[in-house]
Amino acid sequence: MATEKGVVIRVSPTTAWVKTMRTSACETCEAKGTCHTLGGGKEMEVEAINTPKAQVGDKVIIGFETASLIKISFLVYVFPILGLIAGAAIGQELAPAWNLSAPAFSVILGFVFFSIAFLCIRQVGKKLAQKDTYQARIVRIRQHAPADEACYVRQA
Image (cartoon, rainbow, N blue to C red):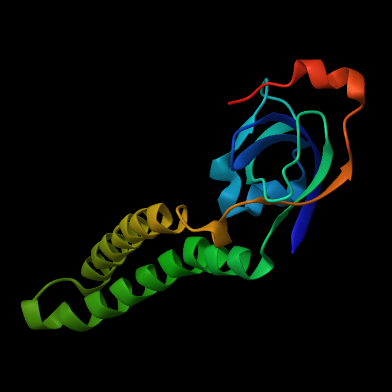
């Protein structure tokens, strides 16, 4: 499980928004769509499933399932390339049958398959976003907020 440290900034009945720092690992993460940059800097706001019932001001550990990250990484990075290669190979084979230029038809079909792969990723991504397995979750509370911060609790 990939984990990050953060501070809860607001809560709802089932989720919490956690402020954390953007790391280099964020750039390759498919789940970065659920994260929002605060002020365009390194601070991130991540919506996470709040199973331990963390409150505003609590210091927490959030995590993403590693297996889920690997599956999503494959979907985002490898699947389009496979589509491109498949389209190019099919174009190379079909071009002579239709009396077309093999290199040109190969390139065209390769990019068509590449584009179709991205449309598929978009559809699958919408479905995966609804599953808890592909969402960040608060793994544990590292430190509860001091009592004087309790008056600043924001409920979503």
